[in-house]
Length: 574
Image (cartoon, rainbow, N blue to C red; front, side, top):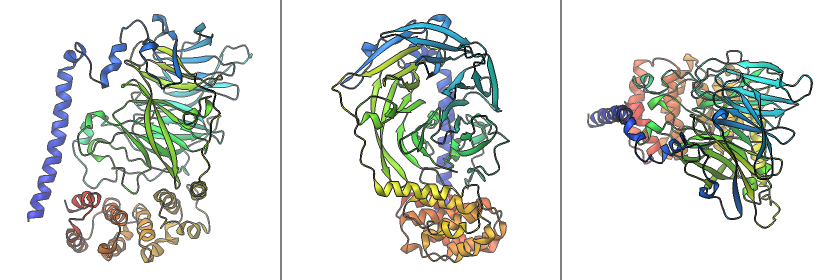
């Protein structure tokens, strides 16, 4: 009875927090006019760029010792606000206007020497990519990805081909387009875009659900209440736009992706800033994007904690930010460590952050420091030019725009690539071998996959579990339930729970009830508790007698000495 009362108190406290968050949002809206008339807080420094008439003076911008920053052009009134940029093969800068159209700028030594309008029809191209003699543009408000070509090779884009049209909103919309190491296109969508219905049936990401045990009835009424899974996502396609696969999802609003020298993909994903201070808040973070991963973005209280074993890997939590363009310094002439650094742009707080990655198993860890800081400095995109310098543009939300260059002026130093970590190289290679089974049922695959379900590397386990889900469940269901290695068994049971086979619920719960919890590691307890949850979420109503046995079993496990386990157990008991 005491525990029951305690759980009721927890539920009331959570609901009270939701009410407080909603009330806080209402209060913020009521005070919006007052906010505009006083000095803005840190998040709202971008408003200083409204009607300013001139881009921020580079003398007021902070860069590390050995670097200098120059303002090459401040946007003129008729040039709109700028949201993205790319260098063409001739070394000129193409810039997308927030309302519509594209500008082409020819650079001189200290300023822009020539400005041309090369398109006046595409609406808010958040992503630009030059490749194969064409310009790819992801036009958010036009709701399509297009390819622009010059039929006469005369520098005029007279041929515009629609490659992909998508439904959904434009707030967290159609963002950057990048060419990957494999030569394919990678398209980045925010959570207001509906994933294309013609995505290939063998897409690595499939079978996604909310997968939260206690849904909150208010979540659909909160911000972005109409978002549909997989929420923000990454598409992979050919350069003709004829086939698209859904690579990863469960993101909020990633604006961009970038590839390191290992060919691995990263993004900078957004938080829900109104949730700050609530138990379900997730900070802006750098994510390593891996095949088939769901990164757990859900509406309101239903967001997954990053420690869920079925959640894609978080590389580094940044905190409060407003993610925009990102790029690796490997295209620069910067010395180490900047040459290997991932540079991520933070629009609201006026900075470019340097993220220093370090291999760890099949993924990475990271640290971060500010690289460029200004007030205001609402950075929308960043790119490296043919001269090896960093270029970035500011703008967005009708703010004053500018084009800047950051050059290295210190002693000449050749970049020193860190020595390859042989274990990390092998781990990544193994992960890619397992990812080859994503979307591809193959004879004999289960045996190859099974050896890695109990891996000590959670990213390897993640790849193996998704690979197993693609194989015929009849070939491995009994083996999952009979497996003696605890970690391998729990990973296989997670795959089985996600298979949506109702006849698997009873044997799964009986297997979990028989686990010797007192001997498990924290990681294994988290896996087991999450497996309990998925068995109840995915496999339908439970037999009352079995439910009573599970209730008694779970009740006896609480409290655990690990808070993550307690979090999951509290939901199960409630």
